[in-house]
Image (cartoon, rainbow, N blue to C red; front, side):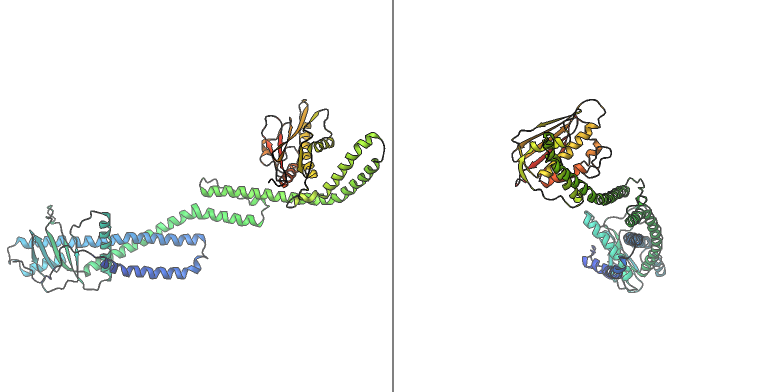
Length: 525
């Protein structure tokens, strides 16, 4: 007959912890965190946006470090509770062995109580060989408020293991929220301390007050809290100063430089000096320096254009008057009957008319675009020959070849096309004049029809276009290949060709320079 004494009836051997129990234990913690987070976010929304980057970094570092400490604390407090109760089970097992060593009913009541007090329990029972025996009964009747089973449980899956960990954490938190004076029952396969492990069907059952466990856990939690605060302060400080040094301070320097540069973007001394870092911040510094240098160059170019426009506007009026006087004289020359005068007078008059129109349109390049072309269909060969006459080609040192059939026509604005071809042919003649060798230069102009477009090719055997000038050949003040050149001629030519819906490009050649101009007919682009 088993001696059960004053030990309350135990629950089934496999005391499983339900999801409802876990949720009930976690509810106080979740409600506290939810209430704290709501207050923190609600009160900080207005002030958070006003914080500087270092302050935000410090706050976030402290929050994340403390969160990490909380995640470490929860398993730690659960393990502490398990170890504390396991020690009670071991002490109770040893006390039970001492009681069993004596003959039945010979152990004095005072000795039994002393054994219970040394194990810090109310009662001890042992199950062995399918027989449960109350070895050390409670001196007075006790009521058990909760049961916990520490015997081997199946951990055959990750989910089971995780559920067991969560249940242990929930039980540990429940110790802090449980009412004082609670009595608990614990089952476990405690070690005897004699080097012999207990059998699988043997376990120790103890009933004990939870208050000593609560006091020990509070002391442990206090020590962990103090240690966590120290670790958090040290870790947060190290992380904060490391991030300030590595990330935040360089970003603040970049921001400070951008603000200073925006105050006077024409001052080269305000361009950021890259630190030479090899990471993304170093790359951002280098790209920012490049952008600032390019902006300074663009501003200088704008100033140069403004000064050029002011200078041109000052001389434009007087130059037009001079050309008008020359035009009057050329009109009078046209009345002379000399054959040479009759031959060259019309060309001189046409050149003067074109020069006057150029003066009137001098500032058009500074506008958004040239005037729309007034297109007509005309033979292109006559226009090319007129350009040759205006450039005094051919010469003794420069050959001039026009390889164009008389029937080839083009649909374009005559004045615009004259300016385009005249700029390119003039550049070729100037390039040939600058050659130091004694070889005779040559300029060849050819044109042909392809489908509904006219293709014009202008080639020379000069020194060619330098690689540096090729990069921005058709940009004003950048594409000049000749010393002292501005590059305006090619920029204007490209703009006029694009106004016709065509394109102009520099071909790759082994000798000299070769430009290809494509002008489509109206309605084909």
